[in-house]
Image 1: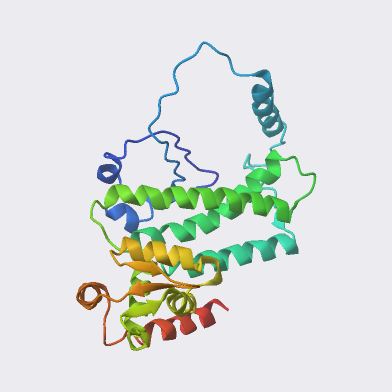
Image 2: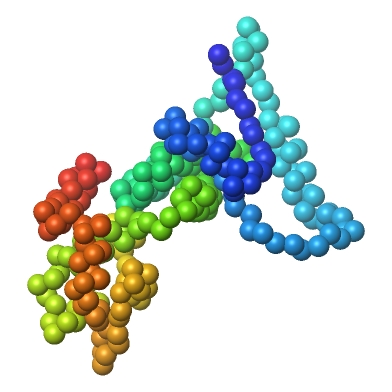
Length: 276
């Protein structure tokens, strides 16, 4: 069946969404086909004010461009598709984006990982749409168009991650927080007088993370506080107060002590090789 499609635009309440899109929607790929936008609860009032001409003209211009696109058909009345391709620079930009998202996906929960392949594919689709809307008089998509598509997908990716909060009401750690706990377990031997320098923690953790999601001292300090741990400032550096009982409990919940010292770094090396 050729030239089929269905565009659905609408809203859904956050409490209803998990009922309509249940666990099976993460398996069959249904939910990841939607580009979501979460609108915060707000009330701005209702005013008797018309849409400005400048705003209307933008929409009119887009619609006119789309209506002016010629639709060619063959002798059987079937639509003839026009091929548009990426330039080499645009293709390189897309591949860089794709590899970056694939690396990040390793540190996402299972439910979040299902969105990544679709989000990557939507960059290609949106590039084609923006190429047409912008009236490019060529069949080659430029790097700037791909960059615009990537910015859009970065936004929708963030929205999808926020939507996952509707599915889990319990407090769980994300993959980077778990990796931080593994790093603390591996750094036990460097604790001096009940203290572990934040800079050592940051350096150890960042060796395991892709460059684009590596953490700063300040971010690690915030993550440690979220875990219920205490950090202190001293002259020229900050440090974690090593609380054995509290940390032992966290390790027992989230860290496999038999593999913590080697598995994570070895897996990183293998995955990096595959991506290269």
